[in-house]
Length: 205
Image (cartoon, rainbow, N blue to C red; front, side, top):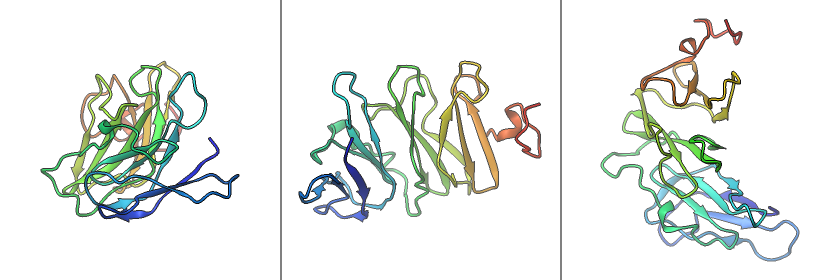
């Protein structure tokens, strides 16, 4: 993809939440279409190439505090399913939006999106597949304990090379987390519970 995409921080209905620029062209930047509700936290975006036939950008994805936005190379909404309200019954007064990550969470062969926001006083970890839905057979969204929020971006990899995907991220209670998808029980699982020591030395036991 030759495009450069950047979110504009926040938007109100009628305004553009993000822009797409072709650095090799003198054409004006492309304004991305708005979502269904205003968002005050539109900070981080990433490009995804999901098409097995057409190379290059399929979607520019920007998670916000109350929805996930995605556009094609023309700035049009990628699909209606992407306007996902995380939960309209909760208040997102202070967002925990952090840099999202792409990775194959559910084993389908297509990259999924891992992101975060906040639900009330709790951090919320969100996973979405290439259609904007929750990945199958994985417990997303995942609510962190009260007062705990994600403090970093995410890494998605088979850390210990056992054929299972792990997600790695930090939280603002000074813990590093490594969750092995498909094997960890649902719960708050800091690094010491993933074959590590209480000092989080970074050395496998």
